[in-house]
Image (tube, helix red, strand yellow):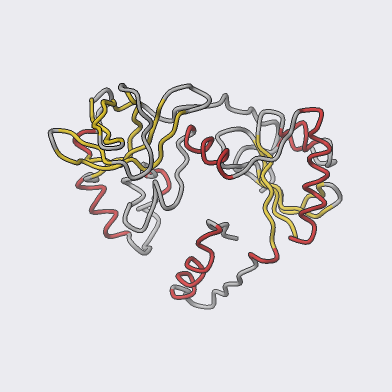
Length: 264
């Protein structure tokens, strides 16, 4: 099962169809499948109220293939896109509204509220989780984006392996870094980043962090300028404002200890 960016369903499906091998079959079930994300420090307590499964034993990035949530058969994964503890629920699209309503009812004592893509985008940014079209694109390699841990060059051949092997050996020419504004200004996507009197890259995502109260951004820049505390400039509305390279993720929660075995 692949969960793809919703705006890229058709593009990803067509690409996968072109590269099918042997007797592999591919079926697009997007219209029949819903995904609900329950995220936050109280997610486990809320979900425990609507299932008989002992979800406290489910470790991060593990899943239960068939779980009853609000009386509905659900694939339950302890994962998310917010930097917080949480769960992703994969279920029939026909059951999504029922589960949504029941989760809000169970979460009311904990202050559970619906959140839109704007809030989600801020959270994933603070946790340095990449977004397709910004930190990862057809023109940005996973090594440049800081996703080396997901690239297994020693596990056989795959599309792009030769190029990635060469890039890893030589070192990526560009690197995704965290930036913090020194001057007053908010970095936004595609704002130019400069040093030594020239453009060295651009901001991929930026905002005024509501959690940290700092003007922060992620930027893809020439690797030679990526050392921590290096001072760079960000062009904001025609003005070149000072910023510096900082470590990421900007926000990191305390890990959730798992109990017992983890079926997956």
